Amino acid sequence: MFHKVNVAPKIVAFLLAGSVTLSLLGCGATAAKANTPKVPFTEASWDSTEEEIKALEGTEFTTASISSYGGDTCIFPKEYLGISGDVKYMFDDQGRLRSIAFFYLSTDQDAFQEAYTTVYNQAKADLGDASDDSLESDFYAGDQWELENGIAYLILAQQDDEIAFQYTYILNLPEEEAAK
Image 1 (cartoon, rainbow, N blue to C red):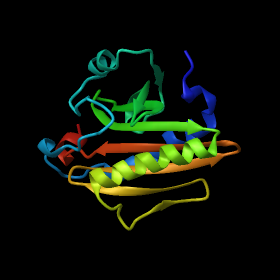
Image 2 (image 1 turned 180 degrees about the horizontal axis):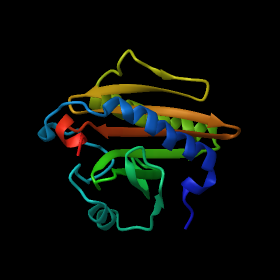
Image 3 (image 1 turned 60 degrees about the horizontal axis):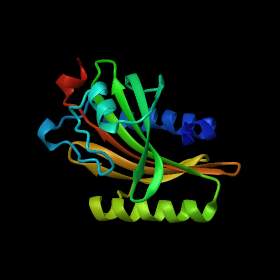
Image 4 (image 1 turned 60 degrees about the vertical axis):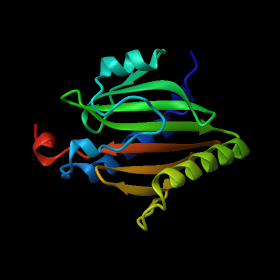
């Protein structure tokens, strides 16, 4: 089965590695579990196990050992807002779900712009204006939203003819839970 994940391993590796850096923003934060961020591109809850998510998605998937939390990353083909991409679930070394991301990759600039604009507009409608702390480097750019019990970000990256974005939600665990 064709997965966009296999099309551009450099961009995928970069965005997964970027998740490592950005997810550190949420480590050790205090917040109540009841206020976990609702992720618009999945029905999974933050208490879902890896097995429950595999049953929920019901499709073929890829497992990557790249996770900023020490556990697995499960990648499923997924459609969000009429856009075909992948959804990535990242687990920590205790099997707890810590990050969920929607990933889209294209070589068509027009299709990419339309998909990115659609997702950005929906993120803004759901979350409000992005924070003033934009995400920018020589390799990527994006926006972030600080949530009551987590963080969301939408970043884009380009390499050669391939351009990608990733819309990610990260759950902040209470300090006592993060220390387990």
